[in-house]
Length: 627
Ligand SMILES: [Zn+2]
Ligand SMILES: [Zn+2]
Image 1 (cartoon, rainbow, N blue to C red):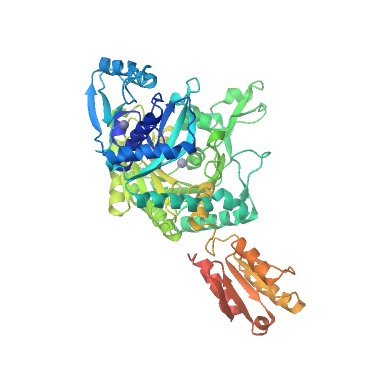
Image 2: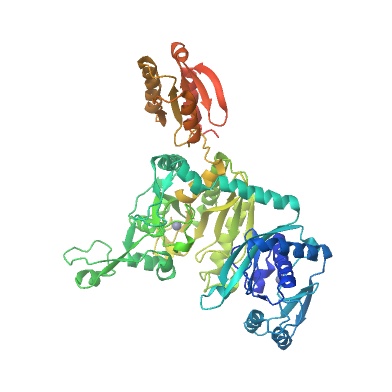
């Protein structure tokens, strides 16, 4: 939860830990006021992994102030004050704000100006409440923990600045961040995890292991994959191809751009326009013949003065819908599973770009499954099983599927107006989730416009959360694209469409894997799987080393040979530094015995073994995609 919860309905959904963290924000404000009674507070919501409170104060709070603020907070927690709720009429709340009492320890010479503004924006008829803990009174809708003593452990983390209500026309405030947990152990674990995450940072390891790079002339958010990173991409694509082929998918290829009218049909324009790169205008001359089915924009194409707009695709769905529609379909053709590792471009704001996690160019493990309502359950179950199979392969032990459903009150506005289909598909999805025993939570009112949605959250080996993939049921787009199939009774029907991308995008998934494995990829996924390190540079020894390399390369193993004159210690250190999975050290004695001395990254020296045995095991481990 990154955004502030604005409505009472959203606030009521606060989890226990969010309540605790929001309560800690009240305690933070109390402590700041003990030191700087004139501070003016705005909003103090819980956020992902913590909380903040925005305030206006002449003194610039810096981390050097944290110790004395935390000392005051500890006193508040020790005093174990009750969080007491008081409902009050609007005019009384306004008068309190005028007297400076809200977000304060008592009356003050100047009004509580932000609280005053917030009250004025509370809708007529909505109850106004304040909360007290000890001397501190704040305008707040809650909820909180019972007493300040329930805040087990906390820590202030950093200061940032933020405009009031996020609007740069408003005053700039200081934003003090902190986090809180039920107890000290959890707090310590959290900071230990952050420390470890820093070491595993995909931007840092990506550079050290030569996986990817960014270049100013290419553009921000446009990753360039170096050979070592590309090796990982190709292994993932191979995995997806094999898995999907076995699951009855067929592969397709589509261009990276399309005319504006396609995105008008899909609804990306105008609703998604801000997230797309601006269009290219192309003056198409009038001498081309219209192709079959081409009806829109024809007059524009014929008119040499008017330009046709082309957009880079932000999603693959519209192109796939066109492929469905390219051939007349009957019920016998369904389910039709179209798969493509499609390249998409999205215009993320430059402030939002973050390593591989938020990029402008991405390749998605995409597929669209077109099926009848009767086939839906089987198809959806198979998709979920594919997710779980991948999680097992990558050693992802903790995951949850967030199943987002519609809100009947918002049909026709936030959600496609088709109540029976919503209820039916949601019931089918729920049924599959329950029967397959998958860990899931149901989140009302967060579905996609065109159908129920499942966001898949996974946790890395060090317990950091990533949202990696989305799985959606769509009963609106097939209709807007006029997709049909001829049913057994000869009537035309609209198929359902499942959007799925279990491996997400290469960018995000590899970013996750780098942290998850700390760069120590299993053999099958390792950018450099094997490196041969000859002891010395005599011709027969190098010949023996080369013969091993050729044999492995003939089996598509990414194997390098360090023929440098470096000392063995240096050769090993270089290979270890690049996290090469398997090192084969070769001396004259190994050569004479047709053996190799095996060394595995992270395991050290495993001793001399017969060459054929070691090579066979390497091939088997890759084939089995061993962990
Ligand atoms: Zn509160
Ligand atoms: Zn899609």
